[in-house]
Length: 119
Image 1 (cartoon, rainbow, N blue to C red):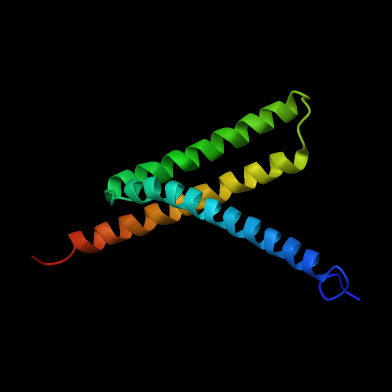
Image 2 (image 1 turned 135 degrees about the vertical axis):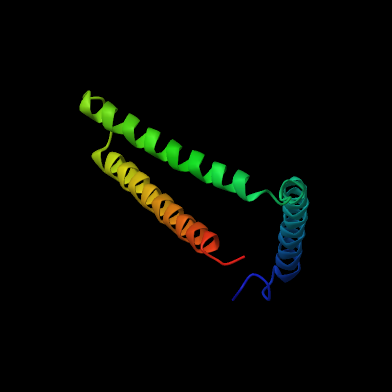
C-alpha cells in the first residue's frame, strides 16, 4: 500500500502538503528574483542607432578573432590547450568574419543602388 492511503495516511498527507508549501514558496522566490533581474534588462533595451549596432557587432567579431589568435599562440607555444577548443575558436572567428563581409557587401550594394537612383 502507499503511504498516503495506508495506516500512516494522515502523516503522509501532512508531509505532502509541507513539501507542496515549500515548492510554492521557492517558486514565488524564483519569480521575484526573475522579476528583479528582468527589470534592469527592460530598461537597457532602449533602441540603439544603426551605427552603434554595427560597431558592437564589429567589436564582437574582433574579440572572437583576438581570442582565436590567442588560443592558437598558446597551443603553438606548447601550453596546455585543447586542440578542439583552438579549432572551434578559429572556426567561430572565421564564420563571424564571413558574416561581416557579407553584411559589408550588402551595404555597398544598397549604397550603389541608392546612388544610381534618379533624383
